[in-house]
Amino acid sequence: MTGKVESAQEEDRELLLGVARGDRTAFARLYDRYAAATLGLALKICGSRTLAEDVVQEAFLSIWRRPASYRQERGTVAAYLFGAVHNKAVDAIRHEESLRRREQAFSDAPAESGGDEVVEAAWLAVRRDQVRAALERLSDVQREALQLAYFEGLTYSEVAGKLGIPLGTAKTRLRDGMIRLRNILSETAGSPP
Amino acid sequence: MTHDELQELLPAYALDALPEAEETEMRAHLESCPSCSALLGEHLETAGRLALAAAPAVPSPDLRARVLAEAVRTGQVVPAAPAPARRLPWGRVAGLVSAAALAVLGAFSLAAFDRVQDLERRSDEQRRVLAVLVAPSGTFAMAPTGELPGAGGQVFIGPDGRSAAVIVTGLPDPGEEVYQLWLIRDGRPVPLGAVDPEGGAAAVYVPAGLRPGETMAVTREPNAGNTAPRGPVVLQVV
Image 1 (cartoon, rainbow over the protein chains, first blue to last red):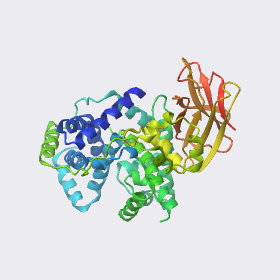
Image 2: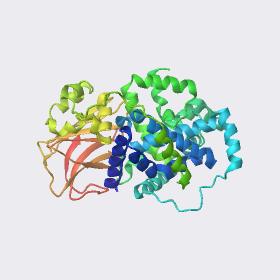
Image 3: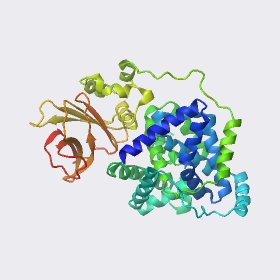
Image 4: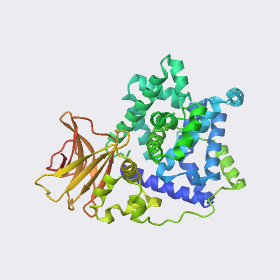
């Protein structure tokens, strides 16, 4: 599986280089590789399909518009893509104006992801199983903090407020949870960090 | 905020969990702090893995059409002069790594680190190795056993104490066998991955520090993927 992950990452870098050259076919291929996974993330955070699709659209367009903002030394293309989607999804649920859009969107389309089978690359599916298993191995409070911050879009101070814990504790739970998650994912046999 | 306070907030930043004012301060800090920037990369990778915990959703064909159509209409902002894909001279890299790391690296054949110098093609592994070498918080020497007297190594602990770069030298081609790195914790070996020398040298990134009472060793295994060492130890932390 390691080989498949590495070649997928290599292909992603080539596609992004293509995007930087204005190659729309490369952009379409990058979209096709990650549309389902990024939409799933946006949907989980935003709760409404309409809003989630807007977020995915904006994220991919921002990558088309500024391909040079991807820095290879900062990480993989996948992490960059998910980061862009996550950032816009969290923005969407935080701001007043978007709250109104969200309420409207809620009345437009239900949140379910659809009954169709999602077709995605095997290596992504394996990574999904790995991270879900890894999350189960975190302490309850670490997992809870990560879920509130990452999937509900709370800031660490909002996490502290919601759980009635000091700011420092919220910061520590997030930090320790992330480090533990990283370590567990690296321990997984044959899987690069 | 102090540098240490900002570094503590890197995981939260990677999770988009900083309030606006702190986010702005963090962005400014990252422009001038390569070690925080490198550490952030690690956390962004973890966040990217976390993203997959969400179930995938079937995108409507309409979404694809909208995204691609807008790309047709939208221009791109690209740098005026694209960065040429060339190899950096060794001197440039030497400016990035600490003196201690350089002393060890100097013992290598440069061929082993050629890929590290080529920033355009640097693999994730070597990027992480360099991030440790730029600002190590500690270092441990590795000594050879009688198995391979010509071997040597050095463990560099990363700035946060929770990562390490292990540099080894003098390892002959193992043929059908495999060199494997281990963390010995509470007397029990934890596999840290294979060590694949080129020109006798290799650099391995490890997402774990060395706590008191722990040590690391390299063995030569009859096959890959063992969960406990079966072959002889060739290098160990002294």
